[in-house]
Image (cartoon, rainbow, N blue to C red; front, side, top):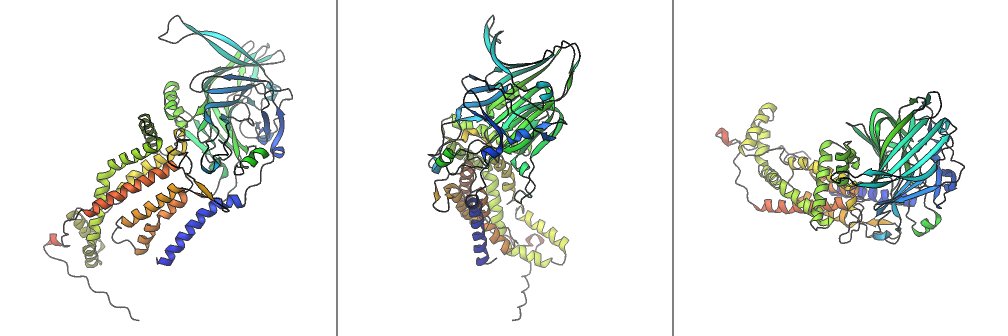
Amino acid sequence: MDRKSVVVLIVCGVLFMAWTIIAPRLYPPQPISRTNSLAGTVTSTSGVPDAVTAATNLLARADGLTNLTTAVTPPNAPEELLVVTNETARYIFTSHGGGLKMVELFKYPESVACGARRNASSNRLASLNGPASQPILSLLHAESWQGDGVYKLGKTTRTEPLPAPATNQTRIVEIIRAEKAIGTNLYLLKEFEISSNYLVRARVRIENHSGQPLAIPVQHWVVGSATPTNPHDDGTDVGLHWHDGENDQAIGTPWFLNKTLGCLPGTPRNDYSVTNSRLAWVTANNQFFFLALMARDPGQAVAAVRYPWPPPGPEELAADPTALTNQHALLVSLDQAAAVVGPGQALERHFTIFAGPKEYRLLQRLGAQLKNGIDQAMGFGGFYIFTVFSGILLLSMNALHSLGLSYALAIIAITVIIKILFWPLTQASTRSMKRMQTLQPQIKALQEKYKDDPKKQQEKMMEFWREHKINPVGGCLPMLLQIPVFIGFFQMVRTAIELRGATFLWACDWTRPDTIFFIPGLNFPVNPLPILMGITMFFQARLTPMSPGMDPAQQKMMKYFPMVFLVILYNYSAGLTLYWTVQNLLTITQTLLTRTKPEPAAKPAGASAGKALPPARPQPKKKK
């Protein structure tokens, strides 16, 4: 590979990176019209728009799964809202569907003011199951036995004893009730109890007041909508997650986009469904927050529909022209089996709802308390070993932060600790590769001598490696061992809400790129950390000894390979590029220290056999 080819490769990489950023701005997607995307709009008593999206026209399922044909129409009665708050969140209940309409989290803003968009952020709270969603724990496709779906809201209280060690003490618990009578034969009651740790306990009671057995069909309980976090969320992490007590499955936006090889256009999927008779919980999640519906009686199926999310209004777009107008959401539901309720009897369903952030320590405690593996909703994904490393790295980062370090310094400290642990192995690898370069003439002589006998050549080469204490694959071993750590860090940074809004130097959110400004006219972001990462990777590749026998073209390609990572990670989170940049600097330092130490003189090849190898035969000159 000559210099010209290298320059062309670099230019192509830069142009590819620029195109992926500039193309969406030069050819923005058409905005989703509110009037076209909404089947109807009504206004609640609180003034919050309750948009009945196009997804509601897809969610009636005659077969209990995904026969998405029958329209779901909104109730005609005025909406009644009931608001309950505690120290962590505001819970808004609605009479339309008799469920939890929306949850607002006091501790977390909708978006973090940062960089070039510092003046574009709002003061709104992060919310779950936004205003264009079906209420949590409402019923889909239940018109035949639920009627118009309009419930009566109210509050009641009950007294219960305090848990141990308190004795002879009680507390008053507030209960939110949603009730509905269908004629004189059927009575529906939903009770919600706001608990701590972002939990809501729910009980549904279906009473048969008739003198005949009553068949209750499959119940399609709404888990909630997985919605974009803010107007700049591209929806990469919008998805659902389910768990059956042993196995779990996460489905995200890439599954619905269905692109070939992850980048080529494919046929999009609009709905997802799976039948599983042991569903313990189902979530609707985005990057940092999630809703989870945990059923006492296991569910038998889960389904989801992808639908357009209402775009920002004219005022919001005028204030922030970079806000996205083509966002999507997922409406997720959990199915429970049909049942027959005898005369004068009732069918009860018990649920626990989680509506909060992906805080790993909190979810670990809840997972141990509920014994249902809800901590897996963190969404680390991948193989078990990567999940383990993600958890260890996140706990380590939080522990260092609790000692007074900022999250950026905690990342740097973790990187240094990892480098110290791998230092002996990396040092041995570097020395081995250095010795291999020194012994290159002897290696070529052996290969030349036994070129007609591959088996003998391999035996002599193995003797040569043992004699000089060289491991041919030693150069790759440190990299292979660090792959689980890197992937674990990669997955941890994606969902670590602790890094959201964490600042250091010019970076103001370690879960996003460290953009300091946009190039005028091109609207191209300038991110210093990925650029520093690319420079350190390039310098490290220059210092790293190449394996003997590697083709010269491959050697040049390896030296310029860091450009690929620069393109891939240019718009990734600053936390990951900080980790990799520090890792590269430490590796460069170690390589320089190792190279300054002299190596012992190499023995001539074949010394163990008691004689030196003859010089390699000269190659015949090529005729002009």
